Image: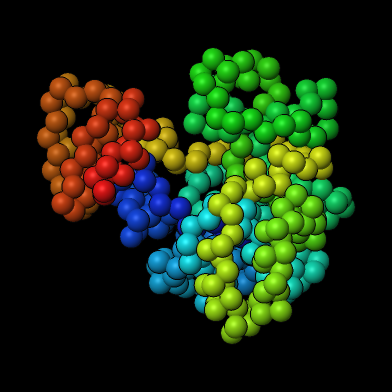
Length: 352
């Protein structure tokens, strides 16, 4: 284990498209979404700890989830949990965590990874991550891992690289917003676009230099607390100052502005588990292409559905195709799969 390797595990999202299982009080990263016996954050921590010392894995989450993290990750100490008092997107929390790591170890190389993605081939993931760490140790550059697209997905951002670049790690030309379907098809046909998985690798030194150059106000704001980071005075400083930070993603804040960004096309399988449909894709199916989690089912004329209950509740269905059926506590969701992106807006209306 290399003591200079660190991870920032991003675990602050709400995952509202997985309602009613994922809620503000208990988001999807803390659920066993695929019925494997481990929650998503447990799987991610285990995967990262194959290459990164466990004590160097920092969990970045909302203060609401502190006790859940400690319960689900018993190897993690309180000082490894970085708590956001409010949600401010990915740039402020990554800057804050990077300053803490830099103060602890000026030679740190880190990966920033979401806690709720699904990666089956962990050997390939570790090999790709090692490749990226090696690159960032030798070069003053910022890196991301891109995913080879398998279809014209409109739900992901894309990374364009120079198609004439034959090196394994390629120079990024630009980051592209989530496209419409026609644009996504063009991206796929061009063969020099990757899905943006939100997995980043860089040295603490280089990412902080990028923040200082492209986000000087935010950088100076967080630097005023540098002396108290990793001390008992840190919490008071963050509670007062963190809410004043700009709400902006790390992509907008530095990656789209920097000229030294590189991408490694990943060789591991990947699913962001962002919706019930993406979960359906990863689950085993019956002869009628129904995916079932926990439930005991009796199905007739039912095809291509995903059915999930708490416990082993008996679910009887006749005449449903392409539906999401989820039973959780006092909520029953029966919703067309092709409208799954609208679940988030439904939740916001219900919670008004």
